[in-house]
Image 1 (cartoon, rainbow, N blue to C red):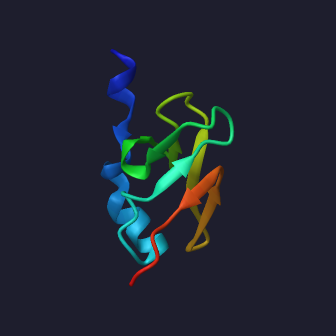
Image 2 (image 1 turned 180 degrees about the vertical axis):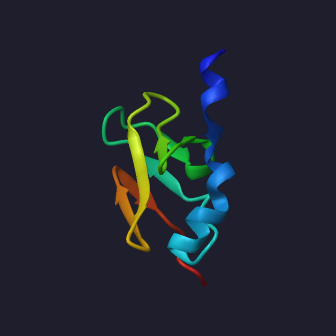
Length: 87
């Protein structure tokens, strides 16, 4: 099995991210804290198992980690996130 069989792109978890952000976030830009590459959230690789890990498409470093415990969502963000403010 190729590595691409293990992940989807960030658009695949758009619904989950929309619940967290209360807005559609897949177009939001992220600057990676490791390689400094800038990509839209939808271009990141989403790995799912017990939780969800979104990884930089350039270097593979963690962008978002989402898990659930005791009915609460735990979310860790890494890097710089750029959201356009509503007008």
